[in-house]
Length: 410
Image (cartoon, rainbow, N blue to C red):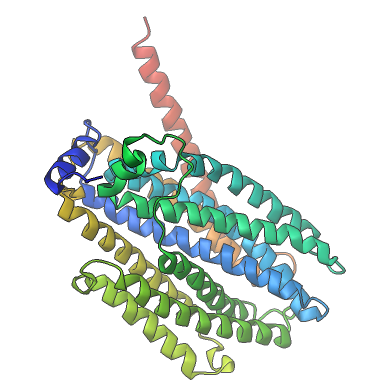
């Protein structure tokens, strides 16, 4: 079946946009999408990498240090899973704002997989919580089944999101996928596009991510007597090994992935991604585990930057696929709404930012203390400010609603 010419396809895609437009310049949503995706994927790395390491360490749990590492990574994975889910909402919403025709079409084409996503996530979440509860000293080998089931379900969800992303940037094939040989297929059961190098790239990133996390983990607890040197040295050694092989996998898979991208050499952030990954790989490959003592925070920061670069590269690939077809997100109709935009940012930065600052500061300090923790003046003040601004926001929210309701009541 012949696909529509690019001019007609571009017109079709632009007609599918929301006729109401968007409330702020599209470049704002584009950058928010990239930034929030990077934050989301950092915790996805901890879920996949930490969960896999928890399983690997569980198999060697007869050694008390490995057993402790397994239990620690089990808890890290549980917390990271919650944050990955919460932070995953934002990039999805920003994608729907400026790429709504592509995203919704892709979801309809594989609707059954999309609907199954939330069930797989909930089941995987439950399985990991069961493993977290049962992964104690003396745990039997059978408990590992809960963890394996959870990781496989998380990987399945990653597969679904990967497929939806690939399908969304191939609109020229939508008609053929929807109606092969002219017969509509509305089952939503088929997977129409898949890129193995791109899919595996993010598993390599998970290995590198948990490795870098362990380097910082070993540094963070260096002042606590209940985290003895042998345990921290094990964490640093395992982190060093996983980070090295993870970055090596990312480099190889990135080369394979980018080789399949049309006009890849013209995308500067694809080059920057390779430079960032190669630089980190060389730094990790040249040193020994003990050489990274005290440098965990530095490498954690560098990994965050490299993840952001990958996020920009993803967006560059998407634009490279859609711009030639006549779809430019920067030309989206704008109906400027300063009130809602300001409300969003004041809520995000004022309410969420201050509350998050309090939680991070408190947890950062409390984790370094062995025994009961007593907050200092700075954390106590942050607590007061966070509570006050949340209460103020609630009062304004309901106050404005009540005022509008009474004013318009007849």
